[in-house]
Length: 266
Image (cartoon, rainbow, N blue to C red):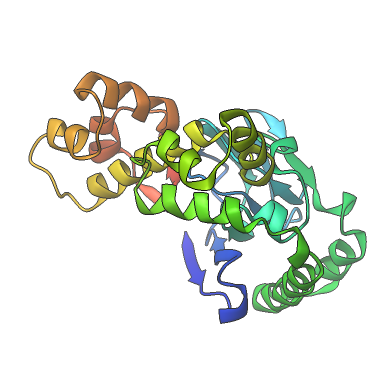
């Protein structure tokens, strides 16, 4: 696999974490991968003349927008990867597309349903880098159009949860924002796609995953307590929920093709 990660231009970095390009060099039949819950929505563009993608055995459109995931999922490719992706910020469905994020949670939408002309242009554009340029211009135009939809209060709440790696007290955050529990949860879910408690849990999982990747621990209990899990068993259960494997299996047997996208050996 050939993987490239591209930094978005400065004016889009509040909305896009990065672009990515993934290509397989040789056709080798079916390949199976596992996605991990990462707290971010995204966009995928796959060249269907080279390969077809399936998620949990359901065929995916060649160009799609997907929402937050609250668990792991399996992705199978029949043929070759020739894929462009956009990894949006957690609130990207609202800030870029003006959508209610909770309507796409654990789901996806064919890009043609909201951007038919763009989908046609992408199909007529030959090179992957040229497609990235086209997507960059398209997103920049949408960001300008939906600037009024940005909820600064919820963006502040999101930033506080991310900075704390899910450890912040949600009650203290609600008090700081002067919002009731119900109002806070409703607004956050519409903009991010999941309730604040679930997003905090995913942020906590991602922090533990980062520690595992960097091998900054001597035993699993160090990771559990360092990331404020109640105990090691709680950490393992939560990790399996979001990653599909135990922390031990991830560390020993799960090669990442790219961040939060792992190969599955059958």
